Length: 155
Image (cartoon, rainbow, N blue to C red; front, side, top):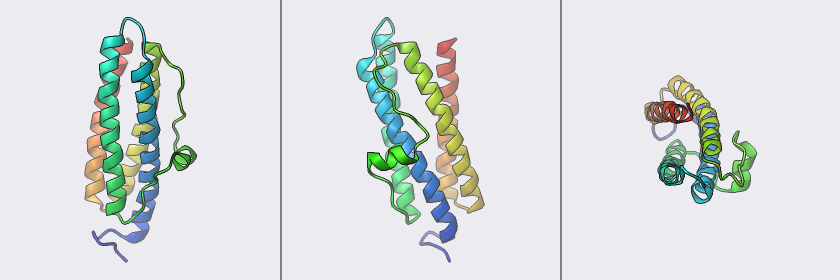
């Protein structure tokens, strides 16, 4: 049996579970980025303050897109931090003021996120879900480029 957009309901349910995990990851990532943006100190302050703002703005956009995709697949997006903390692979960060340490945390976090994005891409391919495939393909390309740039910054 298919849902409204023609995706097998069982496959959509599995996709929604993974999308909700990604949603939780991005919600925690957003909060980490806000903390880094607010608390960064040192010689790289101006450069990293702007970069962290760029990244958290992107993260909050992705949160909305992921939640809307879950709804499109006839699921319910998680919407409490207690639920996010239960399913996210990302751990909270607190009290980070050092720029290099902050960038390392972001690289580590993006490494977790891209793994989940690839998992969802595979599930979406199996479900013939072009909408989710397209979304994850875009996210993976962006994440790869951002990881390359952040890694170059750390060299």
